[in-house]
Length: 564
Ligand SMILES: *[C@@H]1O[C@H](CO)[C@@H](O)[C@H](O)[C@H]1NC(C)=O
Ligand SMILES: *[C@@H]1O[C@H](CO)[C@@H](O)[C@H](O)[C@H]1NC(C)=O
Ligand SMILES: [Cu+2]
Image 1: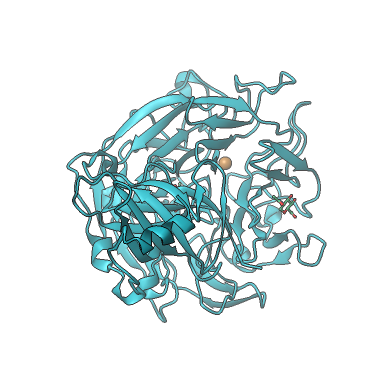
Image 2: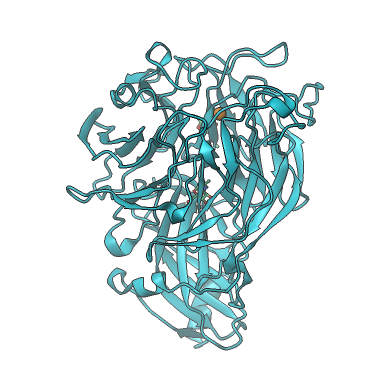
């Protein structure tokens, strides 16, 4: 079906208008809050082998995830016979194939350019004959090419444990890190600067950032998010240790300091996780950051931090609102926003910090202990936690979690040691799990997104623009009872070390909604995309339409750009 057929059908009276021009004020906030309790706790299933340890994970297509590891002796080999450190995982066949990385990626970062190319930066020094230095390497991955291109030595300073972010103009920002590996950072190896790629001046340069000095020694993998605003300014929330600032990137200056977060330290190796809670047009995308877990002391017996803080980033004099993180301390938790806007907290340890084991075999001493097997589902509206079904696999240092467009969550990795070790209590972990959240167990019919702007949904990204109203055809086998639809756009981000660079969840206004009586179970919707790239990063995202809290069979892949 295409647009012409829609207007034809409308003329012959085949379309029944259910809800014309739902304006922003009438956008049903009550519906956002109404959650179905399906009475189940979800389930983990082990589905395959990641080939390399999943230190980083990034969804590159609806059914494909790329993993990146550090240099180590993985079973999966590159064509030249050397152990691979990056793989592409196919979610349909549950198999991993090696990708071509030739420089040391321990521990780098990544984020999408607005044009849909993934950028990955940094790492560690030369490793044997097989891996060249990665500390000044910039890597590019295009879904069309399906493999890495490495630009060695182009990064002006060494970057180990930097953060990355997609900027509203589509460039990426690389923030901080150290110039060499360290258990925790120190002044001699600190890199208190950021750089932007592609460089606006034509030449890659490092720009000083004071926060990265103030927050020593806990400033690695800093937390960085774009603050939504209607003026289109590039305002950033930057945070490390316990300190947050608002930074004006256009002016190159710190505007003010936020209050310090109470409780423990939140940055590597006392690693916590951050998430910008779902944004909504109903309150003009008022952003709330939530930062969870970490630890108080750099001490391997220290219990993990059992608090989360929520802070409204654009409310004057806002204070941190603290809770007990569902009653369970975690260091290195992963926070994954699900299709219905709830947050899944998973993975991590109840004791210790990020880092490698010392000693061998039975004498091993792990710096992270007491793995937390149970995920918590957090409702950002009710501010409640629900304990879900547990995994059987410890997932501590170097593990990941990411949303898949079918509404499930891929969970992989854990490797608290310098090289592949299988005969220890917490071995190098290759098993990939899929967690099926409770919302997939309801009897509520799942929408099937057939087309977007007349293009059928497959694995290809459909080009859309900020502020655009897009038409979608959705099938819902609702047995006569009317569906209750909501829509959202999700930028899935780049996941590593409990951070999720450029992650974003934004509710979308449904502006029109018809039932197409000419085709059984078929609905036609128009959906309004966010107004500007400070609300959600340009580049690859997925549009979701869900019925009550029941996710679609798959989100629609789009490439979101500014109209030219
Ligand atoms: C996106 O921009 C980068 C940097 O300029 C370039 O290397 C890459 O080829 C571009 N990707 C596409 C799909 O045009
Ligand atoms: C990162 O955020 C995106 C978007 O909210 C989500 O889909 C993804 O699963 C998140 N993953 C983690 C580990 O936070
Ligand atoms: Cu690491």
